[in-house]
Image (cartoon, rainbow, N blue to C red):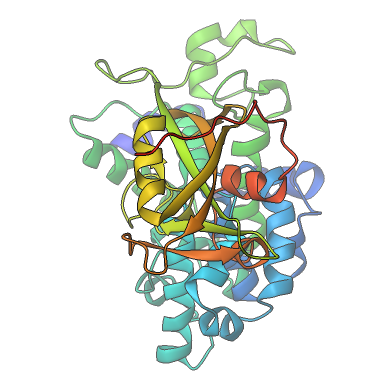
Length: 381
């Protein structure tokens, strides 16, 4: 008996497992998501990329707006990266948008604008991993391909109580072997969607809704924790894997944002600099950040003659593993004819809002009526 078979115990075999998932999905799963109405691989691919590390309710509005701006893969491929990032602004994990853009160009250049129809070929495109390729292939082309995103790993790991492996790579191999062994011969789209729905709606990381699960009576993790006779309507959390020892707590950084404005133009112009392709907000246009007001004012003096400056209200912005405290410093100045800083450009507010901007910077520029502290006139620097 293989390790996978031994781990299964009372969990139903592949055919019964898939049947339960499909039946559950058709009755209780999600059926009203906007990307479910189509088997167009462009729309499915877009939804899969957007849903990586992002909640469904957040993706809804972005997905519809993105499609209005780029209705086809050819439209996306022809756009500039700034146009793409402008539509992505606020979704986070901006490398996804860059890979999205490159992938669209590859589809048009290599495949005449038509997405490949197999998991293997899809994986050769930028930003498409094994699980994402399988989802596109299953949903759009009914290929018998296994997905294994974070939710599905948790679902299978709990249901089958897979034994711990010596390395993470070995654990991954065991999960992929199990995922492929469980694939049904038919109804691949319903099965794939069912796994996603169970992982997102029922088998949650904390406080899983075990009473609503089609495997409530034979889930190995549940039986191990509560005993076969202790199955009740609700249960306490089946704890997810603990954070590795030595992992650090969330950190906080304080940034002073230089909000330099040109005082001599009828429509306000703001100085923006493009972020490096590594680090926070990669490749986005941003108000340049500094460690202190003094540093920000020294930089402002390189852009022109400072007329006045004002501290605005400090705001907090949470990233995945970091909290940013953002202190905007609004500086009105008479720009130099040739600024001593070439990393950025002057933009009108309208033009700036067409760029790829981090969400908090976009909000600042959209709302110039923030309550300001008393004006602090700058000394000669």
